[in-house]
Amino acid sequence: MSETTRRVAAQCWIFAAVAAAAFFLSSANAQYKWTDPDGKTVYGDNPPREARNVQRVDARGASGAADALAGLPYESRRAAQQFPVLLYTTANCQPCDSGRELLQARGIPYSERTISTKEDSDAMEKLGLGNHLPVMTVGRQVQREFETVAWHAVLDAAGYPRSAQLPRGWPVAPVPLAPRPAEAPSAPAGEAPRGADKTN
Image 1 (cartoon, helix red, strand yellow):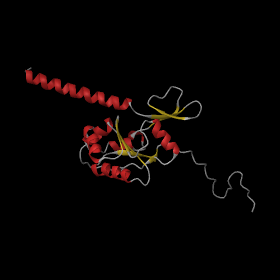
Image 2 (image 1 turned 180 degrees about the vertical axis):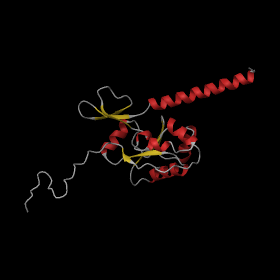
Image 3 (image 1 turned 90 degrees about the vertical axis):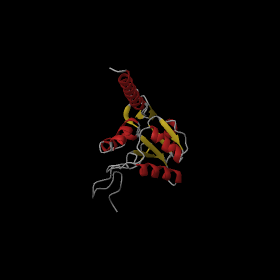
């Protein structure tokens, strides 16, 4: 084997090792939410054994997002698997709209979490994301507030192409960051709710 061939082989091995390490690091840094023994919702990256209702809080945690990745172009799919993009926004926020437009124009497969209640704000602070919106996370990288050049740079570094065609199903509908209480089931048609007086 020539010296040139050995160098190329060594460089390919190093690149593969770095890519694999980046994948496992981004997976290890995933955030979760769970219910503790006292019934409180907790956020962190290492749920204990006694945790209940453990859910992942990142781009791949959104309903249908993982399945939709299969329809992405190769470069976008590889980047999305290693460095998922998650956008945190709020209503009536022009920078949030600009960030969303940038991701959609570039064809980035992202998931969106909305901040509209105190519980959402508390959950955001527990994730260490601060309180200035929008916030974009790309794998382990956190980009606070919107700035076109900076956002493009982070996405470039993660390997996302400058333009791509998103498959059907994207963008995924935004969901609140903090879980909402389950609504009480409605009474069947013709039946009065419990506790209601059936007489007029």
